[in-house]
Amino acid sequence: MASKLDVLTPFLDRIENPQHRARTEEVLLWVTDTFPNLEPRIAWNQPMFTDHGTFIVGFSVARHHLAVAPEEKALRRFSDDIRRSGYELTKMLIRLPWEKPVDYALLEKIIRFNIEDKKDCTTFWRRK
Image 1 (cartoon, rainbow, N blue to C red):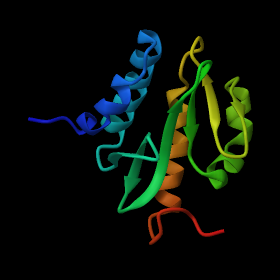
Image 2 (cartoon, one colour; image 1 turned 90 degrees about the horizontal axis):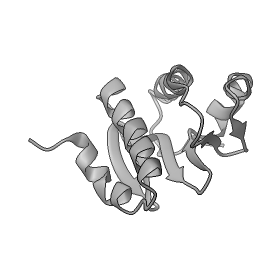
Image 3 (spheres, rainbow, N blue to C red; image 1 turned 180 degrees about the horizontal axis):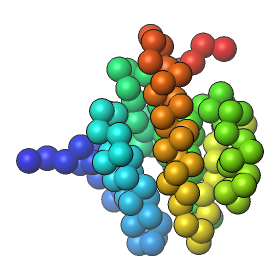
C-alpha cells in the first residue's frame, strides 16, 4: 500500500545533505501523521499540504534551515510564539535551523489555525 508521503519522495530525493533530508522527511511525515486529512502535493517544486483544495502549509529547503510557509496571516498571528521558539521569521516564512530541534507544538498550533481559519475558504490562497 502506498504511503501519502510517496508523492513527496521526488522532492526528498533531490536533497543532497543526508541530515537535511532526514530532518525534512521527519517533519513531512509528522505532518501526514498528525493531520491525516491534509493532502500532500508538490507545487512550485516544493512540498505542501492542502485541505479541500486550499493551501495550509508549505516547506522548502535552504542551506541553513528548513523553511515553513503557512501564509502571512498565520505568521502574524503566531509571530511572538515563533520568536520565543528561537526561530527567525520573514513576511512569508519561518526558518527552522537545521541544528535546532523542531518545535512541533508550535507547528501544530499554526497548522490547526490555518485549517480552522480556512475551513470555508474556496480559493487556494487567502484573499487579500
